[in-house]
Image (cartoon, rainbow, N blue to C red; front, side):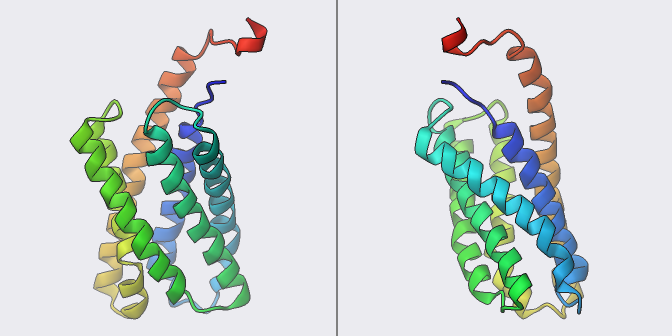
Length: 190
């Protein structure tokens, strides 16, 4: 059965990227780290659940399951791990190291989306993946230089640009999906 919940995944990513930008801006050196736990946990749970389902069942056509499903698993587990680490007062460095490799994967996916002309707006989607990936690639240096306000502001800008790209993509997809799926009926009901 065809199920397309990439819109949900995109808007969840928007929320997560804005929360992460806020954390980098005002939370990374805050004495109250716990306030980001619920937001990171929600974002991670949705991304991990939808990403795993998409990776295991391939509900949409073609390589979109790889591009969106597998990267959503990586994104989701990072947010779940960050929520747990903040709750337990653990160091975030190993999560940031994992984020580096997840970020490289997102950058590769972004470049390949542009190269293969995938999605309705391949350049925009590709840049969205690349900017999101940069957030992961530079997570460890941001933890190391957390007292450097300029470095953190650059990171915040990258995360907000990625979030805005995904917001545009996701909300337009909702707009279009509501029209294109308005008469769709699951196979058992036909």
